[in-house]
Length: 386
Image 1 (cartoon, one colour):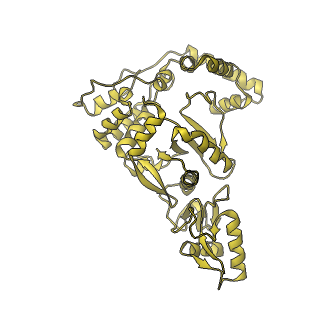
Image 2: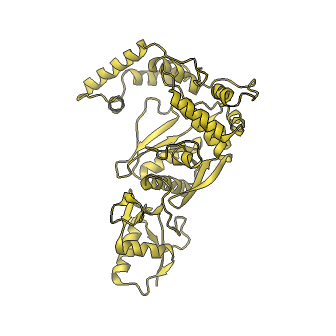
Image 3: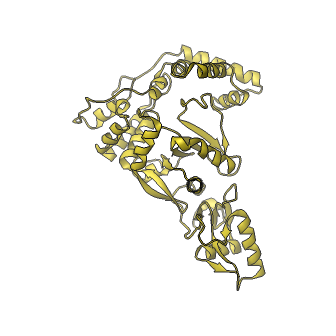
C-alpha cells in the first residue's frame, strides 16, 4: 500500500487572512503547477493530513485516493518520503500579500532544485528589519550569483515567467532583468545580477553579500536575506541612485539616512568591502561625521552614467564602455528599437499611442525633451552627486 507526503514549492495557511476570500484555507504552489492553488474543504483537510504525514492509502476513501492522484499531477503530493520539496509545516503569511510570499518560495525552491544561490533583497524584509516603514512591495527582488544568472532566468521561464526585453540585454550594463507572469501571481520578479553603486565585479560582490546574510523562511521555504548592515547599504544605494538630470527627493534621502543610522557604523565596513563607500560618502558624512572617510574609492561606471543630464547622454556614456562590435548593435537598437521595446517604452511613459508609428514618434519626442532638459541637482549634502 502506497504512503504519501505533502510536496510543493511553498505553502501557506491563509484561513485567518482576507486574501483568499471566504473559501480558500490554504495557498500552495505545486511543483508542477504554474500558479498558486487555493484549497478548501476536503482538499484542504487532506493536504493538512499529508503535511503531518506520511499517510497510507489504507483507510482512505476512494474519493480521497482519487484526490491524492490529482494532487500528484500538480506536484502537491508524492510517494517519495525523501523528496527535496516536502512540505512539513503550514506557515502563516508574514507578507501583507501571501501571493508575493509564495513567489519568494517558488524562486527559493527552484534555486534549490537547480542548485544556484539567491538572496532576497528589499521587500517586506526591510520592514521586518526596521529599515523602512513601508510593509509591502509591488514586486519581488532577487539577487542571483552572476555565473548562475542565465540559468536562473531560464528556470523561471520554464515555470511560466516571461522575460521583459531591454535595450542592454547581453552587455552587462543592465543591473537587473524583469520577469512578468502571464498567470495570476499579481507581481513581477526583478532578478538582479548586481547592484548599482557597488564598485566590485559582480561575482566578487555576490560572495561578500552571501557571507553577510541570514536564513529567512518564505511560505515554508528557507532562503537568504542580507543582514541588517548589508541590507541598509543596499537600501541606501537604491534610495540614492541617480535619475537622469534630477536629484532624488528629500524623502528618499531621509530614508537612506535613517536606514544607515539604524544599522549603525558597521554598515560602513560592508559598504567599503563592496566599494560602495564612494557613492555613499556624503550619506556617511551626514550620519556618522566622526568616521574617517579619507580612503573612499572611485565612483563606479554603473553609477556615473546614471548621473548624466539626460537619458540620451547617460546611454552614450555607457555605450563607450562596451566593445566596438557591441556598441554598433546597441546603437542601432537605441535608434530603431525592436517593436516590443517601443511598446514597453510607451507603456512606461503612460503614453496613449495606438499604432507602432505613433509610439516610435512619441519615444523620439521624449528623447529630445530629455536632451534639452537642464540638470537640476540639489547642493544638499543629502544628495549624492557624481
